[in-house]
Length: 154
Image 1 (cartoon, rainbow, N blue to C red):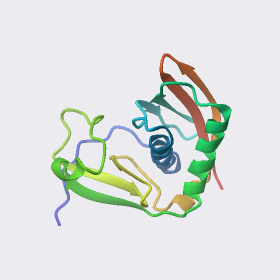
Image 2: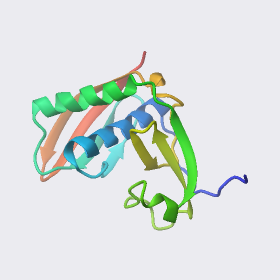
Image 3: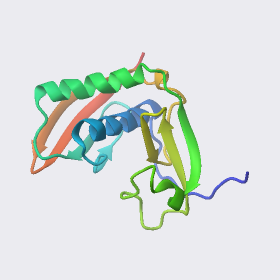
Image 4: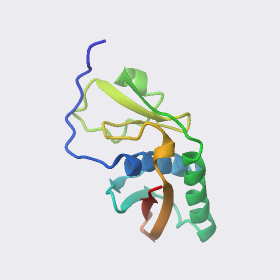
C-alpha cells in the first residue's frame, strides 16, 4: 500500500499526554454527552482542555472523570492507526473540527475500543506507556469548562 498524503503537522506532541487527551475526550463524551474538547493545549508538563457544558461538573463528577481516565489507561489498550477516506470516517469519528483544507485521506487513531479520532499527532503504542492521569484544577465560565491536567510518569 502506498503512503497516504496527509496534511502537514506543525507541532511535536509528547505521546503520553497526547494519548491521555484522547482518553479524556472519550470520557467526557461518554459521561456528559458533550462534544470533544473545543480547545486543547497539550504540553509535556501540564495540559488543558475546554469543554462546552451546561453546568460546571461537581467535585464528584471531576473525581469520576479522573477515575475513569485512569481505569481506561490501566486496561493496557493498544493504540492503532487506520487510514480511510472522509466518507468512510464520517460514521466513526466527529469530523467537525477538521480544517477546511483537510486531505481526502484521514488518519484515524484508536485507543482500543474506547476512542477513535481523526488525528495526525504522536501517540504511545499502548496505554500502559501513559502513567497516571491527574486533574490539577478546573474552572467554569459562560458554558466553557476548562480542565488543567498532567500525566505522572511511571
